[in-house]
Structure formats: structure tokens, C-alpha cells
Image (cartoon, rainbow, N blue to C red; front, top):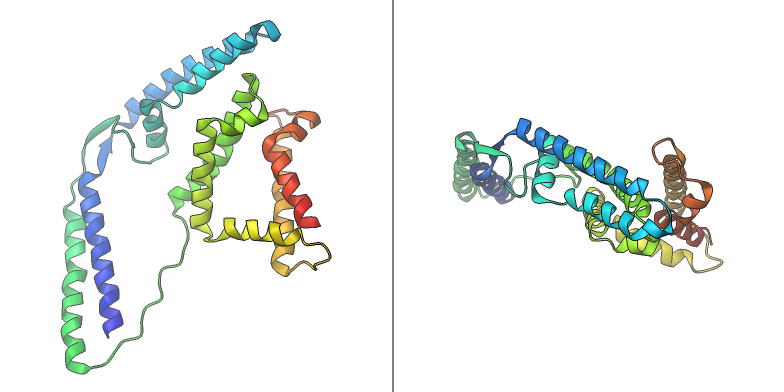
Length: 267
């Protein structure tokens, strides 16, 4: 019984937290966010077109400055909030907010489990029995986080393309603040979705370097998954959206990293 009461306590605490967060939740102005993003995208497109028109080595510096200016517009608090709102996410920087949402329903929902937990504690003392513990909630990510993860994969590719067209090298692209931030967030979501996956990948890479050792079932699955990811990434780069040549695909930093990992796993 004690275990059941503890679970109810935790549930009550979680709902109470939800109620508190609801007090801080906001009603957003989606139309204003859309208008801001549309206007910003027009300016960004104009800067990108200007950069594209500055061809040749003599214009490399000017081209790079135009590309950086366009990229910086996408990292402003207003643009970030507008993008998040249009993805049905709460604005981090408080832009395009109408009013706070009412927390009454969440507060009432939080109170009920707390009362039930108190009653169960009394029953435990009387009966001396213990109920079986409930299974903990499975690890994973929410639908919104899944959408964010898929979006990040596309955003990283697009951002790298912009930086490459701006004259940055592969090494400079990988050190770009926006790329580093997006990759960190992507890895965070991957780890949340499948706890231990990043460490497991590192371990598999280390184990694969030991020559003569037969692959485990997990390593074979990892190899197959990586091969599939490489082929999908190659197809996207060569497709109509990015139109990379074979040489450009081979020089892409992510492709080089995945190819190296595949080589290590195949040893």
C-alpha cells in the first residue's frame, strides 16, 4: 500500500507543478507572429539573393557579410519566438503574447490526487498491507518534441547550406554557434527518446576498433541503421532541394563523420 500512496504523492506533485506552470502559460498572437516572420523572411531572402549575386573571389568577403546578416536575422528573439509560435510552441522570449491563461482547471486537478494520497496513507496504517507498485512511465519524447527533432534535422542541413554558400569551410561551419546549439538540442532529444543511445554509439565505435572481434547483434543493427542514415542523407543532399554534387557530398562534414563511423564499425 505504501508504494501506491507514494505514486499518488508523486502524481499529485506533478499535477501541482503543472498547475503552477499553467499560471505562467500564455495566450499568443499567432497572426502577429506570422506577419513578423513573413516580413523577416522577405528581408532575409533579399539579403540571400544579394549574396548570391556577389560571385567570384573578389566578392567573397562581401558575400560572406550578406550571408551572416541574413543568418543573424533568424537568431533574433523575435524571429525565434515567431517560429516557435507557428510550430505551436510557447515563445521563450515573451514576444507576441496576448495574456496569461487561467490555471483553475489544472489547480483543481492537482488537489484531488493529493487528497487520495492522504486517504491511502491512513488505510495503509490500518490494514498493514501493501499494494503492488505501478510501473514507471516509459521513457520517450512527446509529439511536440518529435516534431522539433525532425525539424532540427532539416534546419541543420539548411543552415549548413547557407553557411557553405557564404564561403565558410566545413570546420568553420561545425563551430558556428547556431549549428552547435542545434546539434546539442538534437542530441538532447535523441538521448531523451532513447536513453543511453549516444554513449552506446561511442562504446560500439570503441569496440569495433578491436580487430578480429565478431560483431554483436546490437553492433550489426547499429551498422545497418547507420548505412540507412547515410543513404537517406546522401539522397537528400543530391535531391532537388540542395542539389549537391558527388564532390560536395563527399566534402560535407556530417557525411564525412558518418562515413568514418561506418568504417570504424565495419572493422
